[in-house]
Amino acid sequence: MPVPRLSNEGDDPLSIFMKPPPYETDEERTDRLRREAEEKRVSDQIDEYIKAERAAMKKKRSDIKLLLLGQSESGLCFESFSLYVSNLVFSTGKSTTLKNFQLTFAPKAWREERTSWRAVIQFNLVRSVNTILDVLSKEMLSALGGGSTAHLNIAQSSSRPPSGSWSMDALDANLDGNFSSDDEQEVYQPIPASTFPPLKFTSSHSLLKLRLAPLRSVECDLKTFLGAGSTEVTASTSDISQMVATPFDIDYRGSAPPSASLTRRRTNEFAVRSHAAWKRSLGMHTGSSKTRPSSPKAGLDLDGATEVIAGCKDDIKMLWHDPLIQELLKRRGVKLGDSAAYYFHHVDRIANRKYEPSDDDVLRARLRTLGVQEHKLVFEHSADAGSTWCIYDVGGSRTSRAAWLPFFDDAHAILFLAPINCFDEQLAEDPRVNRLQDSMILWKSIVSSKLLTGCSIVLFLNKYDLLVKKLQSGVQARDFVTNYGDRENDAAVFAKYMRGKFKTLLKDLSPKPRPFYGFLTSVIDQQNTGLTLSYLRDGILREHLKKAEIV
Ligand SMILES: Nc1nc2c(ncn2[C@@H]2O[C@H](COP(=O)(O)OP(=O)(O)OP(=O)(O)O)[C@@H](O)[C@H]2O)c(=O)[nH]1
Ligand SMILES: [Mg+2]
Image (cartoon, rainbow, N blue to C red; front, top):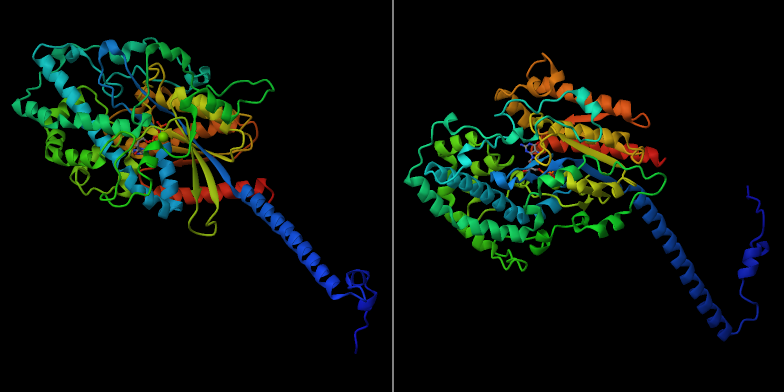
């Protein structure tokens, strides 16, 4: 049966309107066609513009902003005591977590960047060697009666009595982070020389010092090349009063917090950087060592530094494996940073002319973060290939924390790292404050912040591997955390206890109810961290989409 036509094409007003005039000349026709082509071009252009706008809006919606927060701190230099603190490093693992993000979700970009970490790893190794040489020199000098440092105990934590013990109640009373203790100098108490029998150094130690001397200038060169991140912040005692735990915790009384650009202008340390200068100098995607450029910045021949380090390989091994040196480091409580032992263990590979860093080497590398650094993570795999996350990695020292505030405004998620192994350590910046306590003060401030009400917050209780080692070495948690009571001195039990404390703080202090996500992590373990981050990515995305009412 023929379908009845509702209207004849000839009756359609649009068709009538668009119909060419009945007696059109050739010239008029050409003119009309040209006009129509032009109109179509403009119309297509508008369509394209709308399409691009839509895509940009969609992209904007899916761009997650993630802040990596947590403490870290500086070596503190009391000049009159001439302490061996040059290599003191306390951090939480924020930058290492960022590296794990790259390794897990952007492996191709990670592989291209990996070689550029070589200079940092060499610097970390050389710096540890030089710190040991400093301690050795001073000890040998004082054995000859030429110095007074043999009378100083610089141990910061486990080798001294638990003067830094704290209770959860004390935490409640000290929200501002200015925890007071009776004797701030206690950490640096002199001890009588007779406490230890003298160490008998020989001419081989003097020879080692001589043969390793070229590493001094290598350290200087690498430091110049790598920039300010290669030096730990030092603070004089006079700075202590200025350094509160949560400088961003200011009541702006209705006025807006300072913008990122304003903060950026105020001080260079607070600048947002997308890439460290040393990475730019290396062109980031450096190929083999043959094509690696010399640094234009320092006039430094990186291959020359590699040569010197390779030439010192056997002496470095000898220094590290010398039982007398190990005893000296123990007696003097020298801390070389979390990765020193790892790099010494792999010195055959690292102190080599053909050295190429492995993934693990890069995860262990230490370079202090200055201010706030922005990283664009472009996902390479899976359903969200091509989507971008903006990850802000911050410097965690108390002097850096004021720079965090402008980034709270539009953050979607915060990954907060607290080093669970440091329950027996004090801040070098302020020896009155226990490090885990400082982390909890920060956590309280973050979870109670009104600015961050809409933000998902995730906790990493990090450095769990170091906690296991510490408790196994006999350090008693109850000596430092008084409320811990008679619970077992076991890493899993202690971690569960602390996780509970962080959870309670979040539940009690959040302006609005929010779920607690708390993980025990060792972010140098790439496989487990990768799994945790995948889980986290899904969770953050789901929360984000829910808030944007996309699902
Ligand atoms: N053993 C162990 N070492 C870790 C862990 N997390 C980080 N580290 C090491 O600790 C050092 C410092 O880590 P970073 O990630 O640079 O610390 P950060 O929090 O970024 O420090 P700042 O930039 O100073 O705020 C590096 O050498 C890391 O390899 C961990 O879970 N276990
Ligand atoms: Mg960092």
